Image (tube, rainbow, N blue to C red; front, side):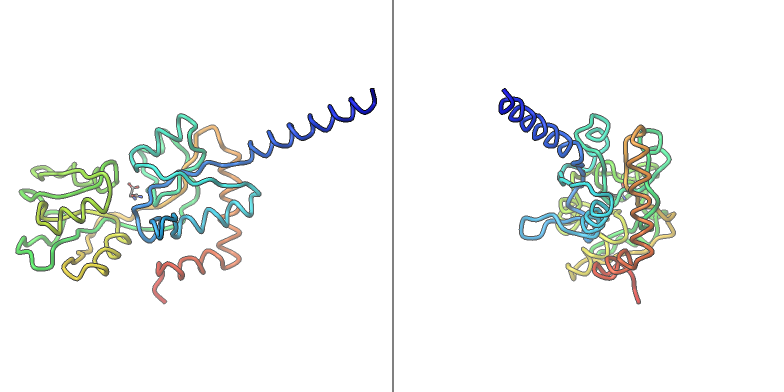
Amino acid sequence: MKKILLKLLLIFTFMFSALSFGAEKLFVGTNAEFEPFEYLKDGAIVGFDMDLINEISKIIGKECEIKNIAFDGLLPALQSKKLDIIIAGMTATDERKKFVNFSDTYYLAQQMIVLNSDAKTNIKTFDDLPGKSVGVILGYTGDVAVSEIKGVNVTRFNGTGAAIMALKSQKVDAVVLDSEPATQYASQNKELVVIETDAAKEEYAIAFRKEDTQLLEEVNKALKILKENGKYQELLKKYNLIKE
Ligand code: GLN
């Protein structure tokens, strides 16, 4: 009898620890087409955001599983609990803040215009976009910004790669995209140039469900630790995100 009880106890302990271990796992959503924040390298999802969330999860003692999905599917997946966290170079906009909470800011960016270097489009600022065909990526802040300008012929793509390909094959006159991936594409493609604009700064932050306030606080504390202990700076340098 004692043996059976002991066995039962062991089984319960095992089941319980397996369950609680499962509860500690965080599903982290991203869209790996946003170099240098998240991109695919030899089949693996790498980038600044991935390193950052790994460092954060070490501090808060939780295991992360990365899910790579379309950018405009990230917020719905968070709401429907398929994800617990989004880290995707996501700008903390007022519109998004109606539905999710954001961590403290971890990077400042802004929209830029990418052009073919030999193009005679005379595009120098956002004011020159009306009358032009402009590629954006569905659901990005760039999509929102360009869609607000009257008279622009907007084409929406599912990812940055498709938008840049359309630009290179002259299907669109310009692509509007966040500063870092935009400069990254231009440095990898000699035929592309980037125009800096006076667009407002955008704050990248990590997104959470409204009710997950404890997780948000833990992540903010971890971010603070990483900023203080030099790790955050080290990661910025690793991905060429600060000019020394
Ligand atoms: N910063 C932009 C946004 O939030 C683009 C983000 C991304 O593509 N990963 O819409």
